[in-house]
Image (cartoon, rainbow, N blue to C red; front, side, top):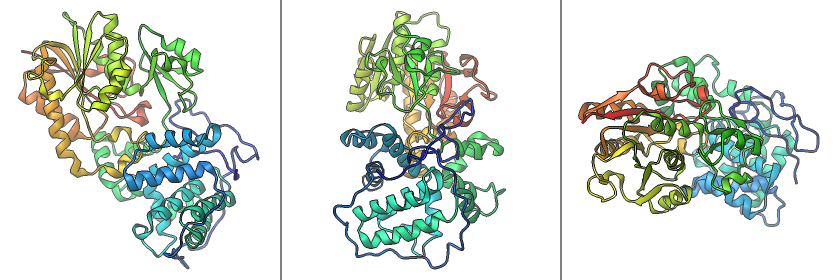
Length: 510
């Protein structure tokens, strides 16, 4: 196996969001520990730029580092087939029996390259006269993963260049491998800070174009997050948080295991805010027995908080609960466990059949009835009568801009043109949720997006059209800081270490 260093997140800090600010593990010279950053000075990388060969074919029988090969294969699947990294990567790691540090290296290389794609492309553009858009897709992914290693992972330059050129030689041929070698050597002449200074010269520039390149987000997403934050000073911090590796959060299912017991079993830490949350010490939850036994599940703490908030609102009559958009089942499982403690039942609705199956698997042995139908059919489907449910959750389909840490390819796939269709669906689902709630019942409107069109604008429309009143959602997230002026709640990765979940609580008046 080729020499390898320990990885860092794209934000320059070891690991993901860390409330304690702890540092990564010290390394050794066995190729898997920590290595010092490079500080070599280089010349003008815009001169004597090489051009890729267009005539090469893959060279057979080249020995390639398996971890880097996996990362390359995932990146190509994401780019060429619109695959999802979080689905393809675990499958390839399992098929090729890559575990431990090799799996961790492949994971960081894959997700980091996807997160920092715009920045990496700007660096690559500074090293070649040929526009990055014209470079062959497979060669482009080789160059990106090589650049990410050199700039954001503690991999010695010679090892990073050599191992990546091996990937190029095996996948795109000798001629293009020579081009890759020349480009990567140019990149290795500068470190991350020096490249940032070259491509975004003014360190004080907080304009949208500068922030977009520096933090590797499309400009429209930078604008949307800045608009939602309303605090210009925080936008750089929010963007940087999206480039950190998120820690894995578990939800201890109430009545089956406590957070303290789960933390003791896993070696994790009890969550800061949600009473059922546990933070895992590593990114792989596969060995946690409580998951296999149905006593816990993987769920971001922000998702736990919004489900808990709905369940915490005082109700005189509290029997029937509804999850209107239940797939893949995390919130339905938490609500099901809470409902069991309150002698209530849950109807979980999911429009996509395979996601409905995921919900069924998540809520086994709970008082939850999974219904495969469209949540907008309230009043038309026999399982969805009007004026019936005491608590209703509508976790509406959205752009997912609040989970860019976990789904980095989403930032390159989503477009502003997606917003109108999504907001139309969100308004229809919220209207259906209001119809489903009984008078006096409570509706939780949730999105994993801070985009105003998907959050406050959608809720304002419902408040105008229907006889509902907004509750102050902050009251139902005790101990959570920096929740703003209310009545709605917007969580943020850089403030709370959660996904950017939005929550509005509405009480139906009549």
